[in-house]
Image (cartoon, rainbow, N blue to C red):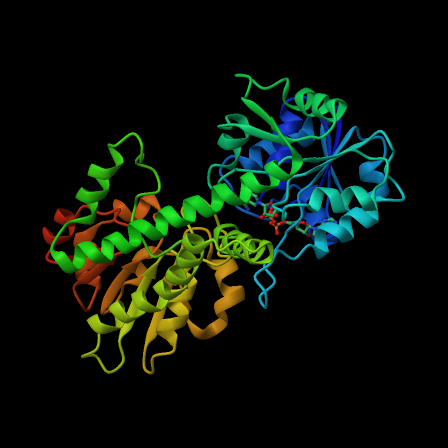
Length: 425
Ligand code: NAD
């Protein structure tokens, strides 16, 4: 099947590579000409495990190509997938649909009437109706994306479910054809278009609330002398609760949860429904970075010019994405404190972090260099290499002794055995 994908970001690229490997003829379109040039030259503009190889295979097989020309991309396509960004409007919290409607209007002169348009971007309820009114004659389907950065290809090939919001039988048949080559055959749930759009927001908001809940519970445990790891384990064994998303940490981040919680809260307000749990999660999560920075600063308050080493800037392991990363927020709060020097390391996200933090911190590509003469070491992303670090070497390099593990990835005994002091949440 001929497929066009608009947007070659964290969603569009893995989806394009995945669909090409299933045998479809895929054209990825992006308005960013530099990005398209880089992709054509075999350079991948983002980090995602396995993506580079899959893109290379797709291009070599002739099934995958890249263009910045909308007419070239959508011509003859049986389906167009919209995967452009829908960032937050910082004033209202609502989703900004400028990119989505720009792309829709750009394709209008080139798209054939028989082409199905599927919206993969996360969009407010009712957006499918609006896109359809811009493209009269084309069937518009909601096909929300649930991939997790760091596991994007695994999630593409083995999705828990595929949600299809299709009004029309023939459009639904095209979606089934799109995923037909997948083995095992994925579970496809067909619902109304508005339900499909809601499922995406309701799922992300639920996960954000779960994270906020366990973070609050961790703070409670800290005050009453309970251990949050034990508490989370005990809760997770209850099949009604489940063990995932019960790990306390520095708060949720990334390009989805923060903006999607705000967007659904905005939609709730517009609809006259108070989504109080989501509102509480948003407020609690926003406070968390500052609160964590204060906990760190308290540990170095006796130093006149403390040197703070940070391991991890990506919003989670397995990605170079720092959008709304709690680590970035925490570093920004630390930098407000006079005399503080912050030295940072991340295996993949240093370049993206530099575009936000500029020259206000010291960057190091080598994790052990970061801790030299540091008063304190803070772990903010759960990269596996941090959990197996050489703590004896770190003890020799550091000036201070405290290791703050905000991701709970280190065995405290490894720290204590080497004469350091472990602190978790
Ligand atoms: P992204 O910012 O990484 O990529 C978007 C791409 O779209 C960019 O390359 C941009 O240049 C391109 N673009 C913008 N306007 C365009 C236009 N008019 N024509 C052609 N290209 C255009 O975004 P992303 O992280 O891939 O997210 C895309 C959508 O998917 C968002 O709605 C997001 O909420 C949703 N989503 C993201 C994830 C994730 O993990 N990143 C997961 C599920 C859903």
